[in-house]
Image (cartoon, rainbow, N blue to C red; front, side, top):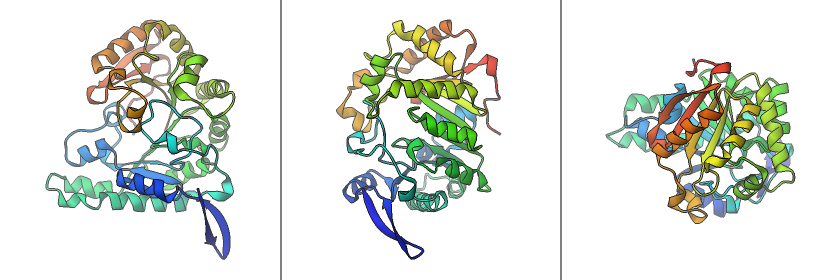
Length: 336
């Protein structure tokens, strides 16, 4: 998964997604730049045609059509979650070295170039709002969450600082599986926290954590708990995100355990969503593992009995997701 490239007259090893896998990703409408990936998500496409916006717009006010969803660790992850849409079966590496990765500015130049290429055909569609299309070419929101585990990218603090420095940047979201707490500590210590940081919570206990997330590193549960403790100390907006899978982690008997973990992390928001039977996850799970939106809403309302400090905030039925807000750490839900 490497290539050799000259850099100021000196050859250095640079991580690259293998060409056969890169071809598959491009065929699936991803953009690929060395070890990074980008995609025009379903909701960005709909927003460009004024057919709806993603839940992040509804919940937090971000501009769906101006969002860059990307990952600096496109095919590198330390877990093989059974519900992941992405091709976890092809993710063979679990680490990245600083001397073999792109610097943030070069990485973003490549990612934004790929994103412009993916958007280039949209003006030919009569349904596309051309004002929105022009704005989409000047992104103001970055979602570091597409595939792989972004906290494995060793220059993540520099990347977030670089994104902050871009004149149009309004917000940066980072989604992590929470198994690299040392990177979260770096983000805190180096003043590089994103606007909003998510940690995934897919299991109420270590047994289910191992069964659902299938970690590739030792002591993953302990590392994840450490990340929850760090989240409670972070000086930025924080979110715990559930993915509920029918028959695996959605039983009401786990609610007390979930509540204890949520209280440990003390996030500003809790997002509860259904597993979606899409992409490569269809090889591991069944459509019956999805919950209807009404079931997600009912689950959230029952969970609130264990979390009196939280309140129901909003929902996005097309995405089968509900968000709760921490009344004891209340912040304006909408990002300025």
